[in-house]
Length: 73
Image 1 (cartoon, rainbow, N blue to C red):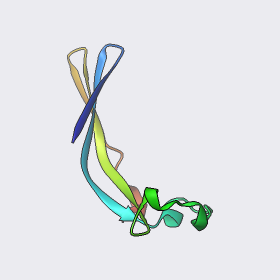
Image 2 (cartoon, rainbow, N blue to C red):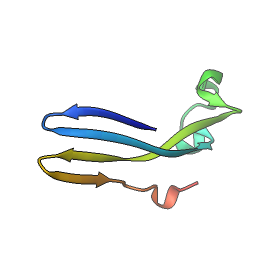
Image 3 (tube, rainbow, N blue to C red):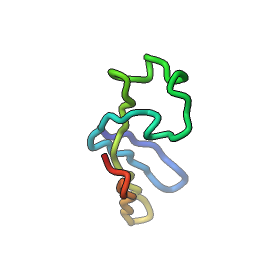
Image 4 (cartoon, one colour):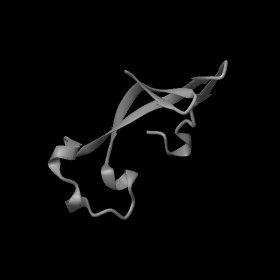
């Protein structure tokens, strides 16, 4: 899915290229497991979106994708 918005002279595209599920306390260490409400969870896990941003403007294209690093699921 692609979402688009403008920021100044730039058009910003948020490009979702997938998702994964993760235990919310693993994702947010120190959070209270009882504070996570069922409407935020799918079978007790958070749905985390993965993607990147594409900026277009001034004759340039800039891709911003920071990856997930060592914490990748």
